[in-house]
Image (tube, rainbow, N blue to C red; front, top):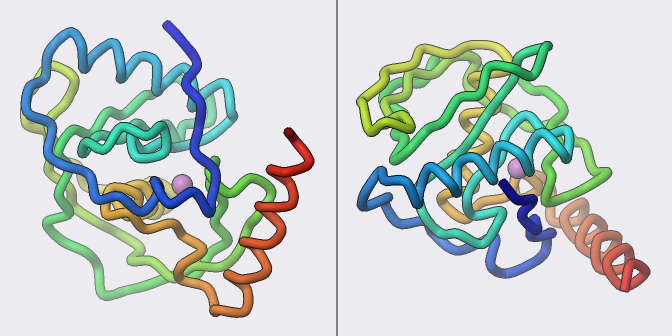
Length: 168
Ligand code: NI
């Protein structure tokens, strides 16, 4: 197992569109285990492959209190979204320290492969529904701050660039 470096906004690689996973094999399962370890280590509830510079349709999620219910979504597709929407504060491991309101569907249905390559159909609501929408956006090359006003996006970009310079 290994911790993987997470890309930080405004890294242009966060805007690449992910391609479908071709084969669910041991190589992919190693990547999944590394992504889970990276997500847990960073105290995140979700991580998309895009964020570790792997541009394949793969996300890992764990919204459980005990952090012991990993959910692996390979080639996920949202098949239904509720009309009911809710606005809540979101954060992202690629935009550390920033939290802001994003409107999302309150419930979604998703179909995806699991780590054994089996089809799974998931009905999600609450935090899990929001997390799924956030992570699937990453696969489209979209970071949550892009829902905010251009003014806010500009401020966040400046802040992130400064913080990354200070780290070097
Ligand atoms: Ni994110």
